Image 1: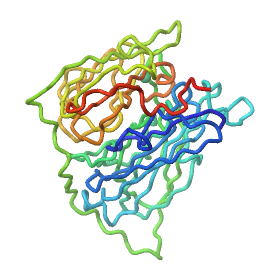
Image 2 (image 1 turned 180 degrees about the horizontal axis):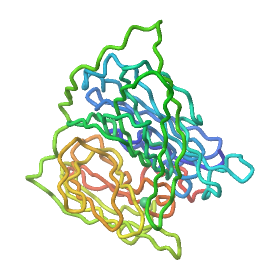
Image 3 (image 1 turned 90 degrees about the vertical axis):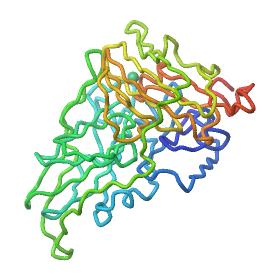
Image 4 (image 1 turned 60 degrees about the horizontal axis):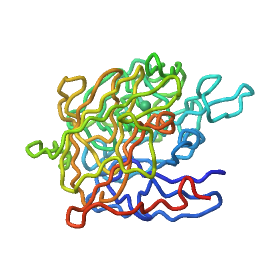
Length: 393
Ligand SMILES: [Cu+2]
């Protein structure tokens, strides 16, 4: 590692200040910085992740492997049927090979991407016939979308963005994009060999293509050393904090436009590229706002905001039934997503980011800074937490 960089604790509802989840503090080469992240006792459980967040080189560093999985335990208490199940973590990470086959990281791959599970190419997994397992996908990719299929088997989605969803449903495929988390239940068919594949995905005419690849080999065989798998119990969801955001007192409606310039290769939020010295938006703690995120480009973008979860109200004008709070949402090409954001947890006071989580786009400008301030003391006066700063010597 030869460049300075901060870290983001993606999706956690913790403080963005000081030694906390401070995505602005730049750690120089050879330097040390202690992160202290007190996790509140009532923090929602789930699979989270942490990754490097250096503006201008986040893509390079995350694609080089600088991310990790962070589990806050308790998901199984909220979805009791999953308690007896084998749990598997899938940290989805893409790498880019050079023409000699070595890992290139970035810029742009010349020979397509290598899709891996925690850096392993096509690992072997075992299951027993009829066994159900809990598979927890964590999209730790810089840019890549994994469209996953498992040899015709059904997948039951039970969680998204770390949290149980209120109405689990069965699907033929699961798409996990940059920074998206999805939990699924998988029940093995009869004995045999099966393949989990990335079935091929694309992000639009101006975007990227991610060709089909094998992701993992699944061997289903009876293991006499283990008890016969019990059938899955009733799928009851008990997640009391998965409540819709109240809509009776909306403090502000805002429009956030994602756009890009194919000539300069720059990416914009509301026609501006990111500037770490500029605070784009100041919001008093306690406000609930409704934002329309509009994509006026020819490729997909994925909206993400730090420190909190939001409710998705509609996609392209079509109401979305409430499934739970999210911290990321794909914004369709030439489409828009309406969300309701609770700026209510006192822990979020400070400055943090919202951005497109396709890191190539973030690096080229598609990020903005928000400050949530305590209305009793007013907005901050200086730029704390900049550390060595991206431009310091
Ligand atoms: Cu984007």
